[in-house]
Image (cartoon, rainbow, N blue to C red; front, side):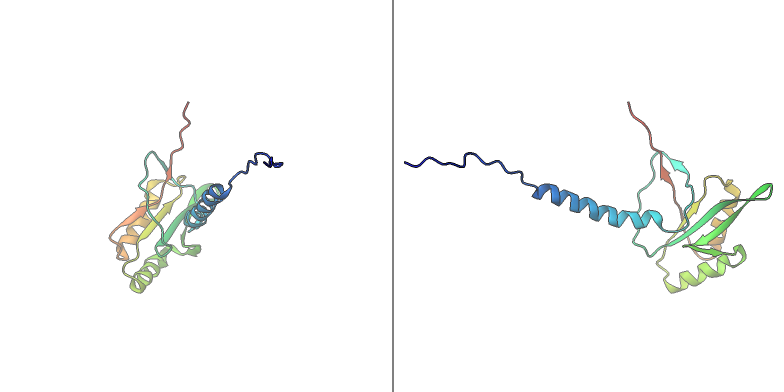
Length: 144
């Protein structure tokens, strides 16, 4: 009879941990570009925003708050490109002609008054978009 000299060997199986980490990495790689499309503006905050998937083909119009002199103004971006308000309608019509299935998302800075964002919404409708989706952020509440 031979007695084992090795004793009990305890190994940690890291395969499930690696699987979970890879899934999280893939999720972050997919979600991060969606959050960063368009011009970075401070979005309005809501309690329960409707979740939308972003496949990268939709049009992002951003309305950025800008201080000028003693007052304020706003800049309009299509994607990351600054667009003159007078040429916005033409630019959006061109985008719609390229792909009529495109949807439009409007990112209005929370520091702007509603009238400024409303003007841009009207231009989007005049360009031919039947729906303009407003981008928001989810309200973070501390529990406990």
